[in-house]
Image (cartoon, rainbow over all chains, first blue to last red; front, top):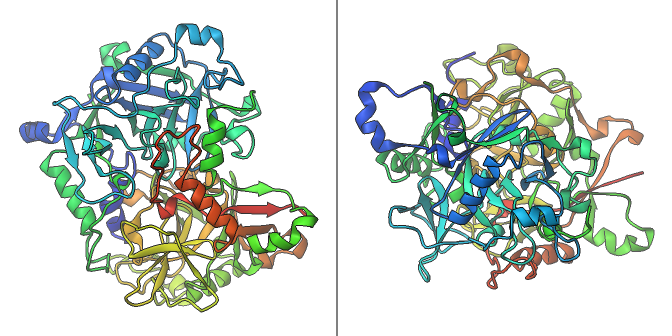
Length: 309
Length: 309
């Protein structure tokens, strides 16, 4: 294996375009601790959902700053072990992996919602967008977007913002975690989906997005797919649906068993440098002198690392 | 299973954002044959590469109108069974799956190219962009792009175009097939990659892209991944690299064994209607009255169908 090749440059510059591609294991050096905390923030175990599949564990950071009601609901669902043993019942390649009960919980009037589930987990008021708390700083990407008036990052989450009403929302990039719903706005109950393909931006502000995958996208990509032309991609042969073995909030685990993730602060100098590197990639390999001044908000993601105790 | 649910609408409107999501099996009705040929074109078996993996077969349409030298090279490689038994040795989640010999064929001066391979398959002049033949009509998407001066479709391939020099190129969307190279422009020999994540647009016009996946993206998504932080994502444990069982040109198969694909003509009224539907999705589900006037060139793909003999 030679140390330097095509791939070296491409990866060095493109790694963080992929969800989780900037993942790096290993604790930071103690000597770097001070500046390190300016660059990295800890993920709270109260915001860390762990989805155990047979291929591996998917770590999702929840974003209460965008959708407090939905985050509170998911925490309750996880504490009740609601998802354990349920499945990814609707998986469409290039689009979404949807998990939950598939017990009419996302049905319309034609297909009444399972009354037992609805009683315990009533329909929620949508949180498609929000007025962010002052502590949640919006860091602009610095270039236009095709869909949103403005795009940027809030605590590592890809975000849109509308100067007209001041509202912000999570952009539906690969790895984004959201709740499914019926036709009416305020109908989400328990079913979630994770985006697994090119950002389906038409879902922006039309569904409540409130998290993103920090690691384990590759396991979602292994999930069995449905046929999008049959029953909207719902996998007809129930035995072919990949199970959700467990879905747990990290804070419900014994402290020793909690994984410790950090996300690069999207307001840090390190992140600004990363964006700059993407706009002007290494000229040894990239032969377009004009560079790439406009980035896709879903083509850059805040790096993530897992600390080893 | 209820016939109507959240998923119905989302899928109906989003299906073709996913590579291959608009796949539909079954021959067209004879009565519809006339208008049908205005909407669909046959994929030539000379342009159809079939990559057999252990998860399933990936069908790639080659685009000689964009890169005749590279298409000629791939046809020769397939006829020589070059790839059979080689592997996907570098797979980075959210970015690319790279296949071939991994025998220094894409190495730099530090790592000389395998002389045996180089002798047989010399470095090629790059075809990053081209002046399209008159028969290859560029159909504009109809909205701006973040990277290219103009984007649209040519024979179903997502394309960029520069009015300054009239050149066109395939945009590096999910499913796009291209050749890897070294730092210098004219160094591609045999190694290919397929985009498996959010479009890495910085590769546009920097690598020779000359095909796209018509079906089987979900099999590429199952490939074992490398660690992007180690040797650029090259899978270190050789036993973990998923094999390319066979890679064949359809025209090299007996006529009876050739799969018959059709691609929706991107100049057809049906495709224009599809784009329109994406800009103004069903208001029963999508509650943003302004719609989505600007589409991502990589978020819409020309529908594909496979005819059953």
